[in-house]
Length: 254
Ligand SMILES: CC(C)(COP(=O)(O)OP(=O)(O)OC[C@H]1O[C@@H](n2cnc3c(N)ncnc32)[C@H](O)[C@@H]1OP(=O)(O)O)[C@@H](O)C(=O)NCCC(=O)NCCS
Image 1 (tube, rainbow, N blue to C red):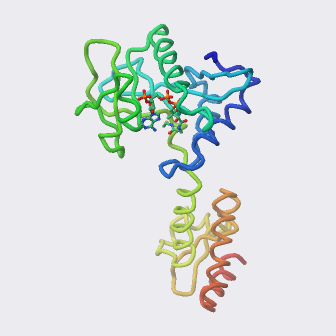
Image 2 (cartoon, rainbow, N blue to C red; image 1 turned 60 degrees about the vertical axis):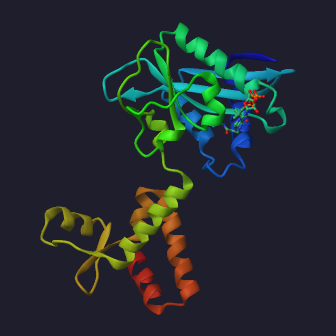
C-alpha cells in the first residue's frame, strides 16, 4: 500500500471511495464527496491523500483550513476520511491519518481538529478541550490535536464548503417556502420594493390582502428548490384532494 497526494486523474476514484465508505452511515447525509469537490474548487483542499493498493485508490483523507475565533491561525480540520469497506480494518485509515498529520506539521500547521468518533480518533492523540468548541457540534465528538504546547480557546469554523445545504436540508427549506407560497404574508403594497416584486411577477397579492411567492419565480431563482416546491404542492393537492390548495396552486403558479 502507498499513501500519496491526489493527482487529477484520481478525482473520480476519490469520489467513489467517499460515496461508498459513507453509504450506509446514519450520521452521514452522503454529501461528503461534494464537500471535497467544493474544497478543491475553492483551493482549500490543503492536503488530499489517497491510499493506493495494487494501483487502485481504496482510501482518501482531506485536511482543510479552519478559523478559530481567538485569532489562532494555521489550524486545520481533518476529514472526511474514507476507506472502501472491503479494505477497512487493514490500518489504511491509520496510515493516512499519520501521514496527513506529518504533512500538516511540515507545512507549518499548528494543530488539527476533528468531528468524529472519539473511540476511533482519540488513538491519534485527539482530545476534547472544554474551551475549543464548534457551534452545533456536541462537545464529545469534537476533538483537537495541538502540535504546540498550548491549545487555542474559541469557536472553530470549518471552510464554507462544509456548510452547503444537503438534499435533506433543502427539502426542509422547500417545506418552509411552500408554507410561504400558500399561506402568504402581509406586506406593504405601497413599498417600492414590493411594487417592483409584483411587477416582476415574483410575488402576487391574494384576495385577503396577503402576498404569496409565485412558484414559477422561485423556480427561476433556484431551480432545485423551485422544482421541489412545485412537486410538493402538486403532491399535496393530489394526496389531500384539497380544492383550496389546488386553487392556490393554480393561482400562485398562473
Ligand atoms: C473510519 C475509517 C476511516 C477507519 O479506517 P480503517 O482503515 O478501517 O481503520 P484502521 O484499520 O486504521 O483502524 C485502526 C483501529 O481503529 C479501530 N476502528 C476503526 N474504525 C473504527 C470506528 N468507526 N470506531 C471505533 N474504532 C474503529 C480499528 O478496530 C483498529 O483498532 P485496533 O488498533 O484496536 O485494531 C473507515 O472505517 C471508514 O472509511 N469508515 C467510513 C467513513 C467514516 O466513518 N469516516 C470517519 C468519519 S470522517
